[in-house]
Length: 192
Picture (cartoon, helix red, strand yellow):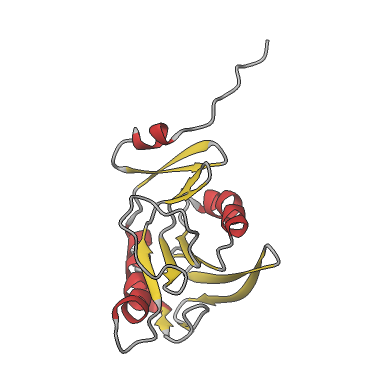
């Protein structure tokens, strides 16, 4: 006798998760991840300031973007929560007052952690490509690296890889330099 077919996860399943978990629905499967640890949160926060400052807030900066922390994205039955996302204001002239976004961002940043790396790379990247997200960054605060990807012919093209204390200028935000050393929490010294 075969096991009963599992029903696809619903939005009700997602909102029933405890508050300390980040829930996503990917290809009908519910994923619940713990809130990010300090390395992850630090890298994401520094990037928000480095990118959001000049592109979202600064009237004298390059401007032209809405930059958001952990927006909930609804793509059909898929519900994704990237660490950061950005929309060009020319595509979204007015920022909507909504609980989630159905318009795909122009840029997504996933800060990978041991708990989410496989989900981010294997399951979510194809959905972002299918939805037409033009640029994607994968930030690894443990390996001290940033991979910059561009959507080209429905596939991800690795444009550049930065690491350690590089001064990063990366599309679509190449107008500003991001000192990567500011993203990384230093490793604790080895006692003895």
